[in-house]
Image 1 (spheres, rainbow, N blue to C red):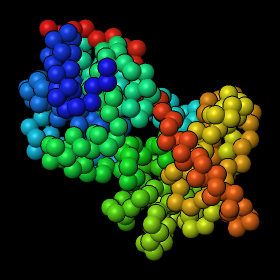
Image 2: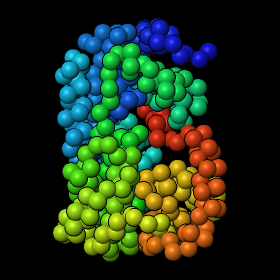
Image 3: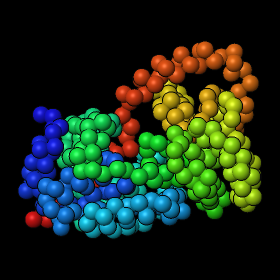
Length: 355
């Protein structure tokens, strides 16, 4: 049976605590989902039985993330613990992979810290775990599993809590590394480029933007920074001038016109239309400030596990293809909204009841 009302969720939390132990650890990002989960668990069990754990990704964590989660914990009386894991650098060595990072870096880090306590995640009906219908799985619990984003917003509203944006996007938080659209074979070169660029972008565009990020693309020997700001503001050119002074950035492009991205992909992605569709429509297009067209190529590099944006250039034929592009965009937007990403699938790490 679907569990949707606040009272039903609170009762279920108490039931899960009776079965798995009353001390809960919240995998806390500071976003709306984990915040709602934390507040519900605190109301059901008492804040003395709830600990927030925030995973720090070193230079790939936005600097304001630490302040925002700290301010929330202090204001609402939660215990907060920071744990660090730089495992992303190993994962990104073979290509971008946000899903694997979430599973093996974020969730496994929190599970290891919890030492058998149940770990609460903000997974909901918009992601893969919500689609499974599972509530408790291998040490993790998703109290928001049946809820939509709008229903989660209503819960936050009932607590009088407003979410402060941590990252660069109007609807999602995350680490800066997701903007590195190529393998990170050299963290001090590729990793530093995305870390520095996406910290600088918030200096110029701290709020009020639908999109504000810097994608790092290009061959492994060249870091090309593509600045995406929507709505467009003239401050982007001052940011471009500052980025050109960064030693690990070789070229800067302002996304003020439609672009073509040349993408090489692992055969397991290149030969599967659904995989290419998800990368293009679900990951790349929503985070670019201008229309983009993707030119796909199959990778001959057996070390590339996902994909690599090797080149970017102006889409000079956009006006001739604009009508078809907009029609595809409208159609695909409806499809992509129904696709569940696997960012919050459960780990295989079991929990030991603490009662």
